[in-house]
Image (cartoon, rainbow, N blue to C red; front, side, top):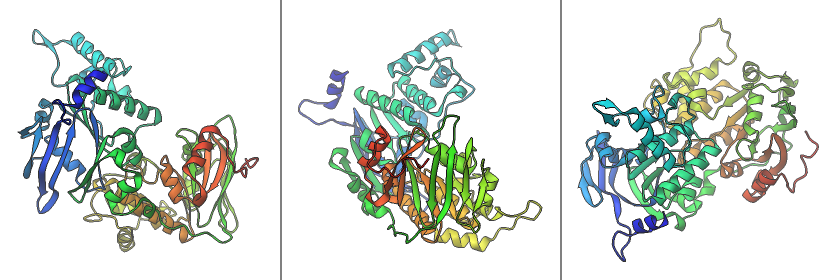
Length: 524
């Protein structure tokens, strides 16, 4: 394997690796809008090349030119040194280009093998040769170390397993160029690790991978080079080894990483807004107790799967706890929500919940922006009263939040991820709640939209609200939160003041359970 990689590193003695894909001054227009203007980027065998930038920067348009979805308006694409015209995705596949989209394309009613060879099934005497198809599928899966029987129906696979099958599908088709579009957006931690193994295996086999992602930590972990686009223009291409997070963020949004987070203002004698007492989320304690203060953004941090999600969902009434008490203490008198809070009780108490999966649990995608926002206004309205939508208030709020949209009547599903996230936040701002529970505040959101969402949450807390978040991005927790609670095996094992916390302190507590701050001991 190493010999093959070395051979791919140079196409001629003493020379650098020759690009197998070159975008040369490519331009793409949609009506009067220039989506890409004179963009030049290249990628070589045996490399992972990140393409990143804010939403609307042109990443998807650039890749859609390579996959034959769009046609060029100017410039050219060269494959292995020769100009090509890609009329369709079928043309792209014929040129050994494979795309793994964020929204996976496997047919659930077909087997793994049938999906892998759909449209190019091996035949014998005019009929589909199913034993040969299974053999070839098994060979491609084994080559990547994927232990999924080829006769398994895709409806039985997890999202991560489906993604692995998509990659194996490209391998089986002898693809040389792979495009991975936000590949970890729906994966859990073990699935991300498996994807990492597949990426490094493909790289060692001399494949070129274009990696489309907003996640900085993945770019630094997986990628050799990174190209930054902004407003349809090529900003720069650099080896990843020459950059750090500050430099990359500055290239993407024109400001430093620290400037993404709004200033924290210390609260004088903060009032408790939410009190959690002896909460248990499974039959085996530990019990969880903590308080959330007025004007505070509090973060639950830790390694994935350690209980942060279970805690916040128990408080929200999504998955009611086994025992414990949730009190809305910011009211006079204090309002006990119940020993086992429900979604309705939590909402009526003035607490909003923003789930991590906005498309499945958060928004009604076919409904309009206005209708999705208006749901918050119906929080305390009787079922027997006609629903009233305060259009002026909604449109004022959309403008204040800088939601990029053509019309409040357009389907919310047509918005970018960042703007969809703003609509979810706006729903609760319109409702009048004063506590927000937020899972993964900026998952699948570009860096520029992240800064705007951070500002919305900070403005909410500065106006007297309180925010509890969970996030898998430690940089986000450290930059946004006033206070950080570290969760390990369902227990709160450390507490840190946000401005004083460091990645080393939080990770040490999360990994080992030891910490310098002893304040939490005995609190549960």
